[in-house]
Length: 338
Ligand SMILES: [Zn+2]
Image (cartoon, rainbow, N blue to C red; front, side, top):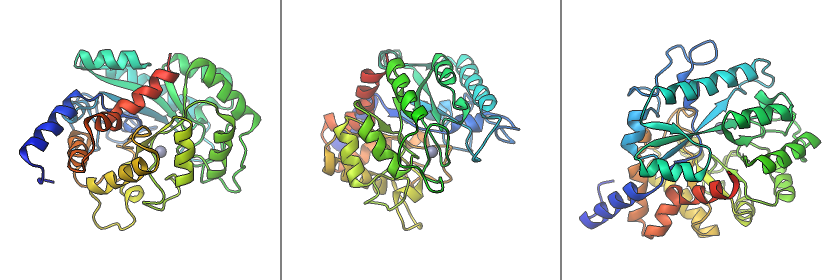
C-alpha cells in the first residue's frame, strides 16, 4: 500500500479531508451495551479501545463524517425482549452522544453537512431487522420519533414484515404488513434497506417500490459468491431505482479465498459495480463491530484513508471518489430524509 507517488498521496489526502464520508452500517451499539443484552466488557464510545473497530477517537482519526449505528436484536428467530433491547440501544446511542462533544445525532442530510462544517462526527440511527416493532406500525412511528431513519425488515429470519435470507421456505412476496410499512416509511421519510432480505423478497420490493432503496452493507455476488451479496441483476435494479449499496468489509463477503484479504480486494467490488452501473450507486457500509475480521489495510475505522488511496491509485476522478466515500449516500438521504 505504499505505492502512491507524492502527488497521488497529496491528492488522496486532500480528497479524504474534503469528503463527507458516510458509512451505512455498524454494530457498535451492541459493543457499547453491557450484559445481559450486550457484551461482558462493554466499551465506551469516547474511549479508544484495542478491541472492536469503532470508537470516537478512531472515527475522528479515520475521517468519518456520518456513521450509521444499527439497532440489532435478531440473534434468534423470535426475540420477545427485542423492543426492550432496542430501547436500551437507543438510550445508549443518545447517552454516549451527550457524553461526547465531538459527535452529534443527525436525522437528515443538512445536519450532516453542518456537522462537517463544524468539524463534528455524526451518528444516524438505523434498525437492522424489524423484530423490535413486534408487527406494529405504531412502533415504527415511535422509533421514527426516536430518530431511526433507516430500516431493514428482517435480519436472517422471518419477521411479520418480510422474510430474511435464512428463512426456511422464504415467501417471495412482502406480506400485507410489509406493504403497509413501506407506505408508512415513504410518508415519514425512512430509508428502506434490502441487505439481509431473501432474493425473492428483493425482487418483490423492486416491483412495489417507486423510489430509491439501499443495500446498507452488501457487496457484489459475481465478485464474491455469497448470499449476502447482490447479483448483477439486483445491482442493475437497485441502480434503476437510484439506490446505493454500501460495501461490507467482512472478509467472507469480500473474497472467497480466506487466507489474505486486503483493502484492494474490497475496491475490486467497487470497480465491478462502477463498471456495471456507473459511479452513482456505491458507497461504504463497513459492518464494523459486527464482523470478526476486516480486510488488511482497513483493520478498523481509523484506517479508512487507505480506501481513498486505492481509489486514487486506480485512477478514479475527484468527483467519483467524493461520491463513493459518501456523496452518493448523501444524495439519497437528501431525497428521502426530511
Ligand atoms: Zn448485517
